[in-house]
Image 1 (cartoon, rainbow, N blue to C red):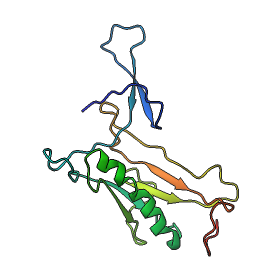
Image 2 (tube, rainbow, N blue to C red; image 1 turned 90 degrees about the vertical axis):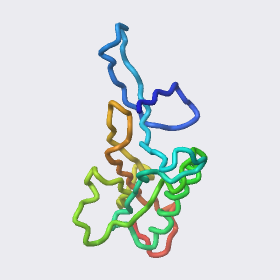
Image 3 (tube, rainbow, N blue to C red; image 1 turned 90 degrees about the horizontal axis):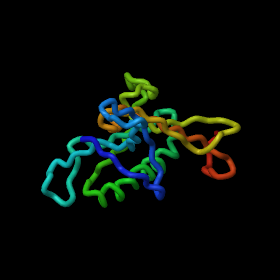
Length: 158
């Protein structure tokens, strides 16, 4: 399903600009906002689990003492999805140490940990979308870099 939304200045989002080749307009461009392709299991329920939840993986290089905090922060988004009618829309798992896939594999949404003496900022996340539907079906990667003056967890070095 294609969803086109007007300019919403109060929230952040990613977009793609597409060219409508069927348009007679001299400027046949459309801005499509990326969205997750969530479908309710029970279409009649006010609150329903999705057919396929959004699954995020915490990269196995993330310091163990921060994984619960990162998981809980990500799962806090479920409150927003509940307001949209989805229960347990987002699931967070840990990449096993013996995983047969790499955290850079675009088939997985990965919360990645990096360490840098001069981090540019706290996190970022490119994503890949299905342009005809503007649906975030391929995966996104978010990187978190510790900023020493703001992160004061014992035993965490970044």
